[in-house]
Structure formats: C-alpha cells, structure tokens
Image (cartoon, rainbow, N blue to C red; front, side):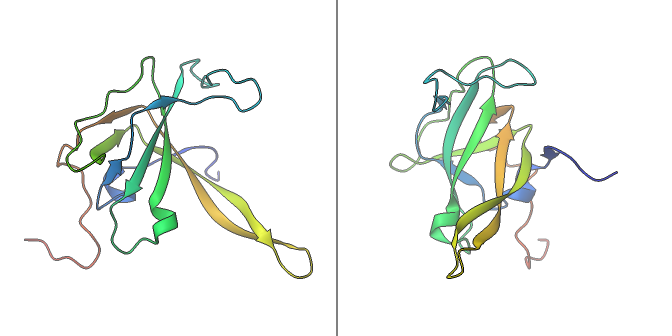
Length: 140
C-alpha cells in the first residue's frame, strides 16, 4: 500500500540545522468565514507558527516556513535569543507533500513544483536530542 496522507517525520531529519520562530503562535483563521480553524480529525484548534529554517544552503524564499500546530491551547514559545528569533523544535511533526502551481509557461501550461505542508502536535525549546547531523559531517 502506498503512503497516503500525513507522513510522520523526525524533527531533526527535516530540519537538521534547526528553525527559529519569527513571531508568536497565532490562531489559523479560515479565509472565508474569518473564524478560527479546527482540525478535522481531532476537533482541536489549529495554531500557526512562522519559522525560518537555519539551513545555510537553503534559498531565502524556501527558508520561510509556516507550521500548523494542533493543540487545545495556544503554544507558548521559548524566549527570543536574538531580536525576534526564538529557537524551537516541533513534536509530533508530520509532512504532506503536494503539487503547487507557481506560474504558467508561454503556452499557458502550468509550471509546478513539489511543496510541503508541515503539522505538529507541539512546540518546545530545542532539546538538543534527536537532531540529525548535517550531511557530510563525521561523527566526533
């Protein structure tokens, strides 16, 4: 059977260099109804945390990521360490790949790319465990 739906992943495998929240967690608002979103599976509120991937090889636009957190109460993020940047780690992380239309070519055909939707069940200060070692680094 092929993988369907959300794929559970380890935080350190997805973000081996970590991420930094750039603001507080906020409720995700439905664009049409202007009401807070709730998760279809659990009925819990959906919160959004905007983060910046610390991977030095990532392109600037690809580094800005929005992670949805499914939790009863608004997640409290750790204190900022530099300006507005707060190092965070997500628990219960899942990823869902999807095809995003990013434009059209001269013939009017869609230009697409694979994009990813991230969801989590919690957010915390980095634990220092579970981080994947960046590729090419030898064990110390």
